[in-house]
Amino acid sequence: MVGTVAPGTLELQEVHRFPNRPVRVAGTLHWDILALYQGVLDGLRTAAEAVRAKGNRLAGIGIDTWAVDYGLLGEDGTLLGNPVHYRDSRTDGTAEKVAAVLAPRDLYAATGLQHLPFNTIYQLTAAQDSPALGAARRLLLIPDLVSYWLTGEAGTELTNASTTQLIDPRTRTWSRTVADALGIDLSLFPPLRHPGDPAGTLCEESMAATGIEEPVPVTAVGSHDTASAVVGVPATSPDFAYIATGTWSLAGLELDSPVLTEASRRANFTNELGVDGTVRYLRNIMGLWMLQECLRTWEAQGRPQDLRTLLDEAARCAPLRSVVDAGAPEFIAPDRMPDRIAEACRRAGRPVPRTPAETTRCVLDSLALAHRRAIEDAQRLSGRTVRTVHIVGGGAHNELLCRLTADACGLPVLAGPAEATALGNVLVQARTAGVLTGGLTDLRELLHSTQPLRQYEPSGDQAAWSRAAALVEGGRAEGQEE
Ligand code: LRH
Image 1 (tube, rainbow, N blue to C red):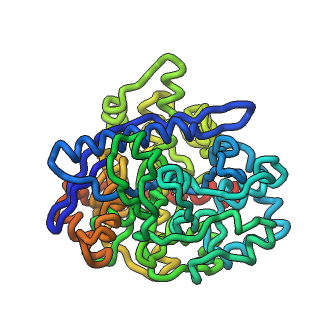
Image 2 (cartoon, rainbow, N blue to C red):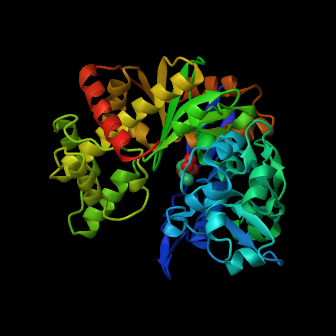
Image 3 (cartoon, rainbow, N blue to C red):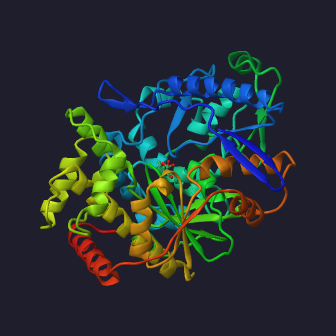
C-alpha cells in the first residue's frame, strides 16, 4: 500500500497483493515466510515505481503483521526454520503447564493479557526442548523479522511485543517475573522500539532486490496490525468503541491505563499496548475467519460459493435462528468449519444451519452478538460509556455484518476505512517524517475528513438480541469458564 500524506491530504493506493498460504509439513502448520518476504520485496518494487510515476519520492517504509509469532535466528543470523503458525496444535495443553508454575491470576496481574492458547509464552513453552530454540541467539517477531531482513538492524517493536505476554503494561517494558517463572530468556529479544522510532534504512541487498536506489528509512510503526488499525479509527470524540474486523474481530476501547482487575481477567479482556502510550483494551473474537474457513471448505468440496450472492441470501435468512459463541476457542483451528459450526449448534440444542447461506447467517449473527457482548463488557469493566462503534478493517465492507452489529449493540456504527491498518501505519510514519504533527486526535481528524465512511443506525428487535445473547451466555456458563 502506498500512502500519500500531507496536511489535509491522505490517500492510499493498493499497488500489490500476494497470497499468504500457510503450509503444513511434518505435522506442523508453518508460515511460508520466504514467500511472504518475496511478496514484500515485489510490493516495494511496485510501490517505488508507482511513487516515481507520480513524480514523488518514497519517504519511508513501515511494517505491520499479525501478532504473537516469531522467527528464530542462529549465531550467524540464519533463520532456524520456518516460523510456526499460531493456529498450529503444538500449544494444545500448554496453558495447563504454564498455570502450574504461574497462576493465571498472577500472570494477568503482571501482563494484563487475555488468555489465548497461542500467546508467545505458550509457544515458547511448547518449544522449550526444541533444538531450534536451543540454538537460537535471537528471536524476532514477524514484523521485526521483515524489518531486520530489509535493513540489517534488529529491534522489538513495543505494541507487538505486548502480545507475547512478556510485557508489563504499567511499566511498558519486559516482565522479568513472568520470563523468570517460565524460563524464557529475554536476552533473545533485541531492544524495544516504540512506534515512530527510526528502525534503520534499506540495506544494499534489499535496495538491489527492489530496484530502489536510495537507502529509504524504515520506521517502527504500530507493528502489531491491530495497533495500526486502532490508530486508523476515524473517531472524532473520545466516547467510541472500535471493532477491527478481518480474520479476527478485535473489539474494545482505547484507554490511558490498563485494567488489571480479576473481573477483567475473568471476562478475558486484554490490555495490549497501543501507539502514543495508549492501551488497547479489547477481546479477540473469532471474526471473519469462520466464514473464510467455510468458504475454503465448500470450495474443497467442489461447491464454491460467490461471496456477494451468499451475503445477499444470508440477509434474507431468518434472523438469530442459530447462534454459536464466536469467542469460543473451539473455532481457532483450521478445517471442517461448517461441520464444527453445525456441531456447536446441535450441542446447544439450536437448529442446525442446512445451507451455506444459513451457515453464513449463523456466523454473522454470532459475530454481531459477540461484538455486543465485548462492547458491553468493556464499558462495565472500564467505567467508560460508548456512544459510537467504529468498524474498521475488511469487515467494514460487509454491510450485513455492520447492520447486524448496529442492531445488536443498539448503537450507531460508523463503518470504514477498510484499510485502517495501512492508514494507521502510514500516519505514524508521516509524523516521524515531519509531514504531520500532533496526537492521535489530530491523525484521526485527518482520517475522518478524507476517508469515505458509512453510518448504520440501530434498528430491529432489541429484545430478540437480548434473548439470543442470554442463550449464548447460558451455554458458556455451562460449557466453560471465561
Ligand atoms: C490480527 C491479529 C490479532 C492477534 C492475532 C494473532 O491479525 O494480529 O490482533 O490476536 O492476529
